[in-house]
Image (cartoon, rainbow, N blue to C red; front, side):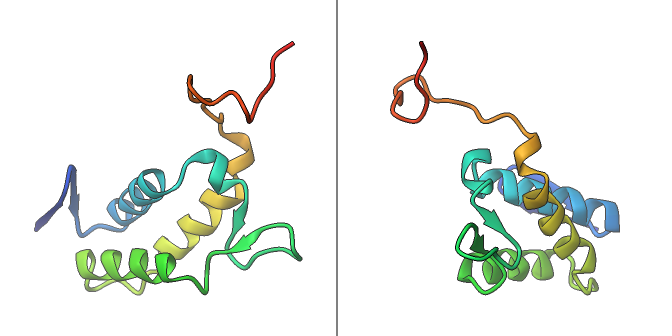
Length: 103
């Protein structure tokens, strides 16, 4: 069975749950923002995602899409995605030079 959410077409398989989770994360968070967030936060360094409404929203969307899932794959993917955010390239916008200076 297939469900359609925007441009995302997903089926009810576990690997599709992971793909859907990754797509949601990439849509909602830039890599630059992701570097300031972790699942449970870190002492005044990173923002905790777990207690936020955006986290609840993402999990509700995924639960509606994958109704038989217990969302273990999704929460694992979310944690991994933020944990590896420093390994992804941060794209700089051409109009915003305040973040990065070139010499």
